[in-house]
Image 1: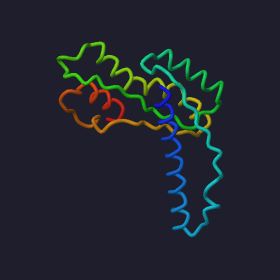
Image 2: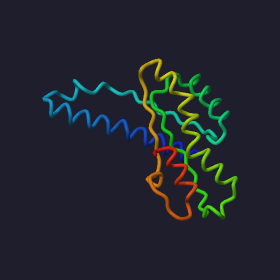
Image 3: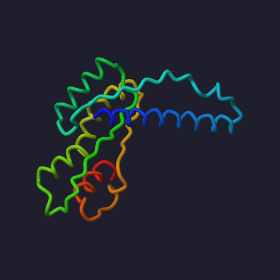
Image 4: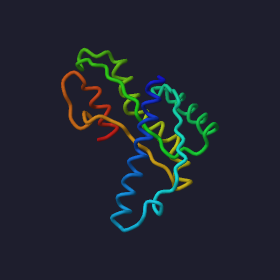
Length: 152
């Protein structure tokens, strides 16, 4: 949704800001001025709505992004859903959707954008996931398993 797109765009801006601040500190410690380390950023952030549980929709949206934007320097995988059911009470369809959105989508978006990043020897892929991918807890077993697929 639009709010999620704006949140993601805000996260990307924050990542660039933090990278810039770290570079300034490193430059100052090394005795260099800020202007020697930081190129001026003409930062453009684009956000697209896509049903990441649908592999073909991911690939079609990726094609559209490449046509409209060009080179993608940073891909942020941030989608996530929670069924909120105990495993034995969770409908199979919800388990499948959780796995598709929280795990499989990372593979599809990466497959869509990584080849060009490798060709250009430039780019970053950021995976936003939960610490619940590192352990499980009652009531969100499918969520924990899906996030392990992303961060485990």
